[in-house]
Length: 331
Image (cartoon, rainbow, N blue to C red; front, side):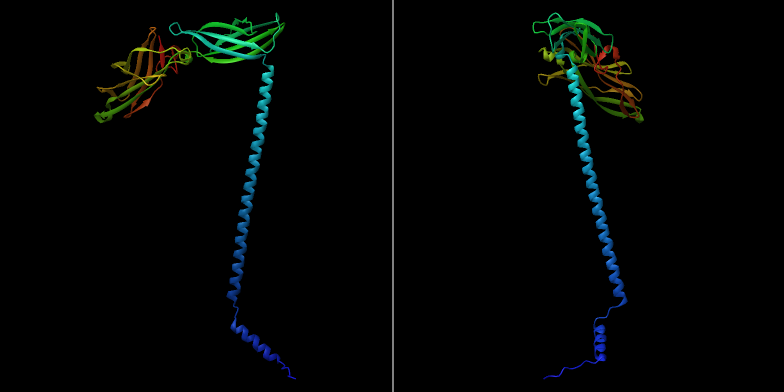
């Protein structure tokens, strides 16, 4: 039998010392491991905090979306309820206000107002329209009942910007008002004018005086009422007039070009430049006459010459005698 060899304690101690010599662990290595561990923990904490912030932001966004959807639903429900209540209180099932005739020369239009009650009782139902122009005094207009139980009335009124109509249905001693809304008048029957003055300034005298050239373009479109009634618009003697400080410096006939069936374009290119000085005003007008003898004066542009440049100023046409923001005068 082979004998076991007994190790002496000193021999084991020597082996341990030998291993320490082969794999030495210095203090520097120890602190390095600690620092690396701390950095890893710190980075992990940052990632965790960033993840928490992202989740919190996502949750906040979801909550805001849910809240917005909820309030939109509530608003829609409220609007639906208000609309239903208003419809329930409205005694009319149909109503309308329309322009059926217009005299541009005398500046008068005829409005036709129609209302159909939801319920009808023979001999116990009547209706009156109340008409006001530009917020003025209300005018009572009696309505006649038709065979279809609808009420209709027509009324000629002077031109105004907006006409408002209210209907009052009466059954016995009870009155039921209904708002028919507002209708544009002058803007709906007058032709629509738009235009530009494309100017070029050549400065002399140290920048205090300039020669002005360029071209003028004006487009004229029949009004909504004209197109509805299939009425054409033919303008005679289309001219452009240019004023400097109220004094006319140029007057020329413009060329007409029918762009399509809805509007006509008038153009003029300045052949001879005119002089202006700093501080003066330039006004460019388009003038024409229709087949009925109605004269139109449209302010294309009004500019103030200042500091070697041009600044657009307010239109000079009196508002009381004009439409379209005071730029069109009709006589």
